[in-house]
Image (cartoon, rainbow, N blue to C red; front, top):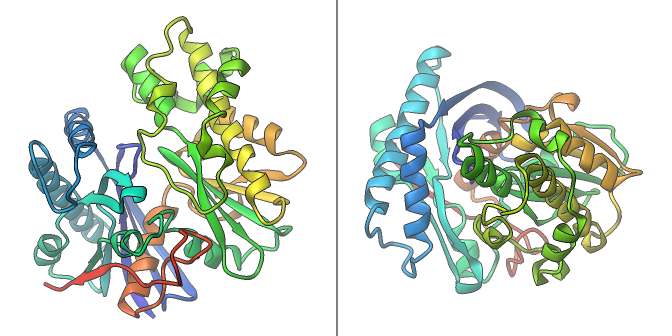
Length: 365
């Protein structure tokens, strides 16, 4: 078994998740400790500026403007996260680190995806092998390059006795689903996750999120607004499909005319409704849903998902013994080992790749 650390800095721009697992790239032998390195508000501002600059990219290797500074920061922040994690948990023996980096543009239709973060520099600083650049090979071959976690979701699901078919829903900045029922997983992005809600709250209140869905719980959903956004062609596309974080920015624009509570409620309902819209595109209707990511901590969103996905059961990853906050970091540890062992990480039914594909590059110190 290989001891691997996984790192994830997602589209919510909240910080770096760290997790240790032991795996051979097929079975998960053990889960180790987890950690978190939050971003400060000034660091989030830098990453938001990088997202704005990244939207203009047409060369995956270019780092114009603020992107060079942001890439150096992302690399250093991930190194700090690992160093602190190893020290705090008295860990000395790690075989590989899985480093996703920070996505600044994801346009698979242009065969372009960019995750800033210097894998070789991270390997040199940590004195450990680092697997990175997990999406590029899939996108270059015509795949969506996302989502990447379905093969890990499938490995997790093997340990549960839940009714099948099962769906594992990750609600980060963008939401994605993995459908599991024995064979290769089926997966896709479903639509906005927390990104629109977070951006709305920041614009209207200065707060980074609607904590515990508090504002949404007090508001009234504008179903006409939700239906109008769901008219977007993305929601009629079959799996696999993926999104850039800013693909639905047009649906926010500070929602003039909405109170804070009504805006939060409406955007939360949009997230839940977009998940429900993917069900007809799955091979069969899931009987059980397990929710991970930041959205799993939002009781209002969980209630909305339960209502829109009924009669299927809906529960959080924590409720089934998984770590809702650390699954993506664990997944990149798992993907790093699969990369090390030249096992496929993307599949025709998860990203639209032409065949099961290995991915990632291993940098050695």
